[in-house]
Image (cartoon, rainbow, N blue to C red; front, side, top):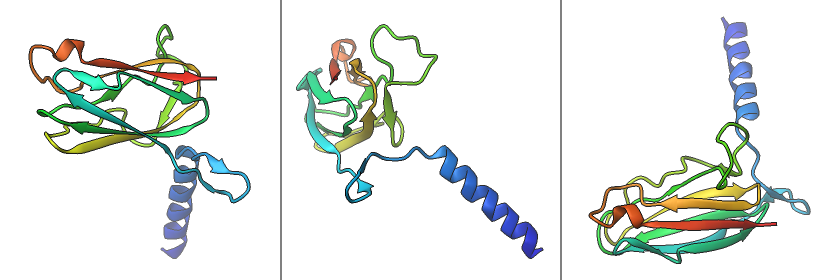
Length: 142
């Protein structure tokens, strides 16, 4: 019985370590790199700023505050023009969608920008007549 429990625990540990991607680390200290925090507001069918620049290899935290009503943020993990068949250019720590962010609340995404390109983000919660134009761009520079 103990042997099967140990075997099962070892298998779970192995699968966890293989399936969870490593976070970028500071080579000098071997600790996870703090994310670059980018604050975005969602208000009146637009994001401000609507264009965000980050460097390739950067761990980024997008913090989105909803000002007027419930919004959300969905960030495409593939750059514009790329087919969604290979490895994505953005590696998320969780979902690439913030879910619902209610008025006066903040939600966020944390990811690593692995490939240069232009990535679209948009509101993921139907928020009214202007919802379709509520978009922005994340630009990952070399």
